[in-house]
Structures are given as C-alpha cells and as structure tokens.
Length: 89
Image (cartoon, rainbow, N blue to C red; front, top):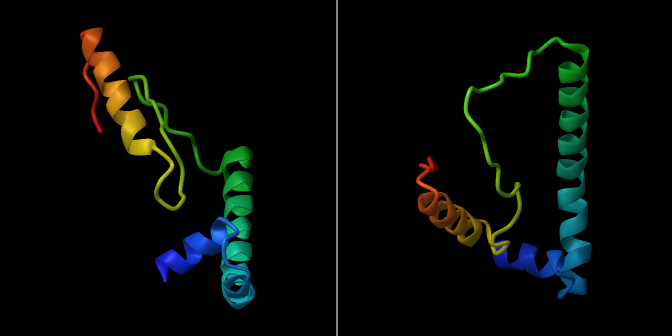
C-alpha cells in the first residue's frame, strides 16, 4: 500500500490515482479542518505557546520518506559538534 501511495504522490500511476483519491480525500479534509481549528485556538490565546529556554532546530515535516531529513540531521550534528555544541535528537 505504501508503494502505491508513493507512486500516486509522484504522479507515476494514473490508474491508482483514481482509486486512492476518493479514499484519501476525506482524510485530507479532516486534517485541514484540524489544522484550521488548531490555528484558531492558538491565535485566540486559549492555548498558550510554550517557549523553551534553549534554541530549537526543527527539521522536516510530516511526509513520506526520502526527503533527506536524516542526512540533514546528521550534517547539523557534525556542524554543531565542530563548534563544541551538543545536539539532542
């Protein structure tokens, strides 16, 4: 199933596209609604944004594999090590 979704994601399978889109579209709409509500809650001040006392580097987002997050994290770790800083994953 994962390979089928990746093929559709990359535009490599037109036939699977018409099979998977009707199944995935409701999930996409639900996700969009959740993000919309979350943004309203934070902007209105109902939920306070937590600030941490240390610098934070966020790499990547929710996606299928193969976007290079692991390699970028390793590069950041090497760069910070050279500067004498510690990285927590």
